[in-house]
Amino acid sequence: MAKDKKTFQDRLAEEIDEAISNMSDEEIRKEAEEADDDIAAFGNHMRVWLETAKDEVAEIAIKEAKAAAEKGRAVRSQNVITMAPGKPRTRPDIFMPDTVAARHGKKLSERDRKGIEKDLDDLFDDDAWPDKKDGDE
Amino acid sequence: MAKDTPEEFHSLKEFNDELDRLFRDDVALRNLLQRSRNWCIRNNRAGDEEDVLQEAVMRVMKSEITGTRKWPKGVVFVDFLSGVMRSIASERPKIGFRKNTDKDLDAAKDIASSCSQEGQLFEKEFMAHFMALFEGDDDAQLYLLALEEGQSKADIMMGFDWNETEYNTVVQRVKRTRNAHPEMKEMLDGEG
Image (cartoon, rainbow over all chains, first blue to last red; front, side, top):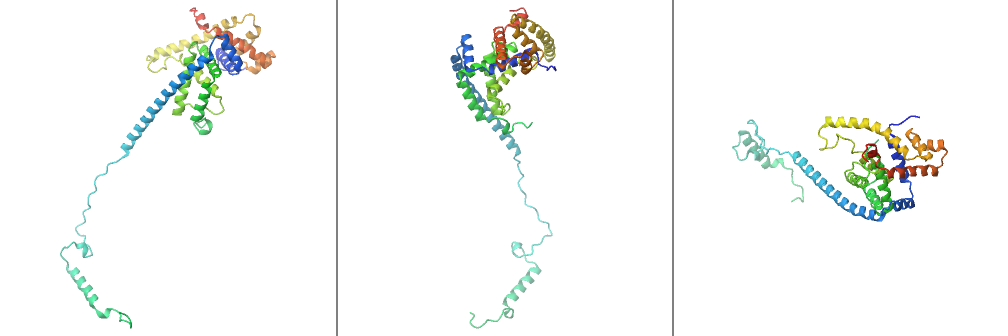
């Protein structure tokens, strides 16, 4: 038979653990009585302990949650990048706006003046407008 | 195996409900204490059973929150706790691995090595002395010899033609005698 790496004591402890787990309530009570152990007193003692243990674990959980939140905040602040204020882009010297309004009151060029005169001629050229029909106001 | 998938572990609520149910049951608590005592005797820590039981519950409560050690589905809750107690009870001999305690690792390794050699010798001595406690109880001695050989429960039952009740009776007898002699190691060391 192939031997496992467990020692005799390991195997014995496993066997006894299983035997204990299979004990009926009656057997457990009887064994406690024989050992003069008060299982009710032990139960009460353990319940009191459990309450304090739960409080302790809750405190730990709160501390850990706070620490995690702090860590999260620290990570987030590192992710915020301060951007340099934007600078207006300088236009190249050769840039020439092609609308009058864009000149910002600067002196009109010869080309501008000719353009304006042509616009005015077109505006006042009656022949350029269609004839009025009868009944039209 | 995929770790921490929800299907493989009980939820925190299921764990808390079962823990509360267990702590309402005096008999179940007594049973768990006996299982702790068993692991403590195995690791020569008789008397620490209540500490080990509380430590196991505490560790599991903490780890259920952090998610590091959850209660697997398909495992009976008290069996899960018994496994944790077994692990805790066996921790103390691991000299050299305790944080802030074993600072000199080389010395600790020497101690651990000598402990291992002593352990093998101790196993043989323990077996001889333990068998002596069952003089006149042939069934118990046969059972212990079979166990020492690594035979399974099924093998032992078949080999000795025992039924389940006969087998359990022998194991219970061995358990009681063992519980009555947790000082075995001290006896061997000449301290008892």
